[in-house]
Length: 263
Length: 263
Image 1: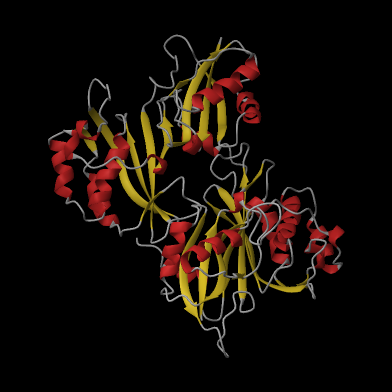
Image 2: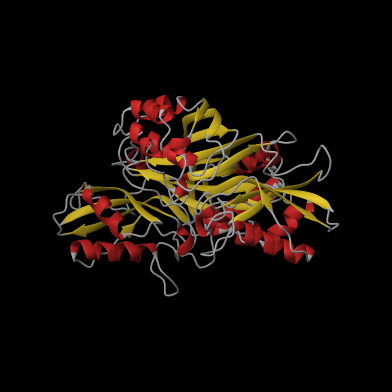
């Protein structure tokens, strides 16, 4: 048996998310079906984590075990011939499946990066309509960044967790939390050891009200000090969010994506 | 009667192009139907020029005449409530319809800019799949730019004109012709007084073969000196092309787009 790792990009618009659900098509399922065609095996994919319906991925990472003798790096090319154009494998590689060096796409994660994209303009865009949230009231990037800074460090994020989340502890560490410009949009980049269910979207929803001057920054301070869901803001829509990058002890998805470019 | 000008962004993926065709839905038609709902009038839209099936626009410009008393700048907001999300009006303004100062979206054009987007990578992208051409053989940006430079100036572009084009003269002047990087893609920006049918796509198709070292740059020199269609390269696919910007004596679409941003 070989353990193969896939770096996966997907436009989440037409999927119910990563994980198989009764109400639509999941990304996991589409890739599983393509792997069945290639290997003849019923393959279970283990991802770094789920993404919700409508959330995108630039570097989702998943592993599977196979008896197939196809060279690891060929899986990306083979899968892309079977997958729809809104799911692309950007790299495939082999990793150890036994012993001390065993790699696991979920348990080996060191750092996860998300990006949330906002178009702050009078009129929406035909091009970013499924990858950026359109906000038509003026935002202040200074206020957004004053709020974003408060997330850095180790906090109890219970106020930023969707009801029904079953995490054992709600304490998480945030390494990066920053708004910046990217073309026509402003983007929020956040990196952490891990995230609770809907955590990034609730963080963004809370910051956007501060950025629009509808809420004072003290509201966010309060939500971090008194960690109850009602102290944070709304959950920002799924379509602005992209799973951006994952760091493992063995590799950084960023380096693998760079190798994809020819120019 | 008032003459209203619209600055229009569209994702051309789901349309047969700007102009009404028997085989599908045209952008012109969708906006015409929305104008009918708003004004009750049967309105004829005059655009800066057609775009082909699958070609996008960031700043298509069109005018129409109406008896409606709706303030000019309100048309953008009113139309966007009726239009599908892949067509957005970015600005609307009034321009003179009579006398010396008469504005015409087509006849008043001074300079037109197009951008052609290429993703040069091993694997295609889920995100740019409908807005960039994926090229999986290595390109040289130096070779692309050596070719692009040859287009600058006034030339007979008969070799870069689709069969069936009825232009009276095939001489055109190119002001800007340059490849550069833009995020994950490389982009070709070209500006001219006007373009023949399929001209930009044939120019790009010809340059891509030079950039891949399949053709020598002397092939392009020959096509400009001996202007016959067979001397130029293939027509690059429509989906990489975007009508980018238009300069009129009265305004530049770039300035109008900038006013749309709130941050």
